[in-house]
Image (cartoon, rainbow, N blue to C red; front, side, top):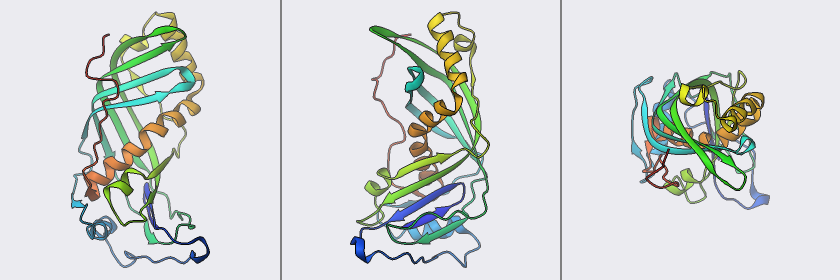
Length: 243
C-alpha cells in the first residue's frame, strides 16, 4: 500500500496473503523537499505513467459528467466545466501493506472551484418523464480526498481506475450558486426539489461526492502527477438532451 496525504490522499495497496501482511511503513520521499516531484518520479516507474505538470490555479476542462443526488430525485449533467485546484499540497507518502490505514499529517485544505456555464438538471418524477432544464453552476469548496488504489499488479491504468475514493469536507458542506432559470423557477416540482436539497445539504453533498470524488482524484492525478489515459468525461445520457 502507498499512502499519499495532502489534501488529496492516495493509498496504494498490493496483494499479499492475509497472514503475511505487516504493518510497517516505508517513506520513499521522506528526505524530499518537493513531495509532488518525488511522487511523480515514483509513479514514473510504471510504463502506464506519462509524467505531467500543471499550473496551480489554472482550470482543467471536463466536457461532461453525470452527478446523482437520489435523495432529492435529482440528476445533474455538467457540461463544459472548468475545475480549478488551489494550493494542493502533498503531506505524507508511504508504502505499507493492504491492512494499513492512511495516517494523515497536519491538514492543509485543498480548495476546488467548479464552474459550468450550462448544466442540465433532471428533476425526476414518479411515473413521468423528468423535468429537464439548465443553467450555470458555480461553487468553491475545501476538500480532502482519500484514494485506496488496489495495485496488486503494479501501478497501472486499471489500478487507478479502480481506486476507492472518499471525500472529507473540513468546513461542512459547500453551497453552489445555480443560475436563475433553475433557482428562480416557479415550477412546483423544481421549487420543492430545491427546498429539499437545501434542507438536506449534508446528505446531498455526500451523494454528490460519491460521484465527484473519484473524478476529482483522477483529475488531480492526471494533470499534476501522471497521465494514465483515463477519460474524465462520461456520456451515459447520449449526445442530445431536449430541454
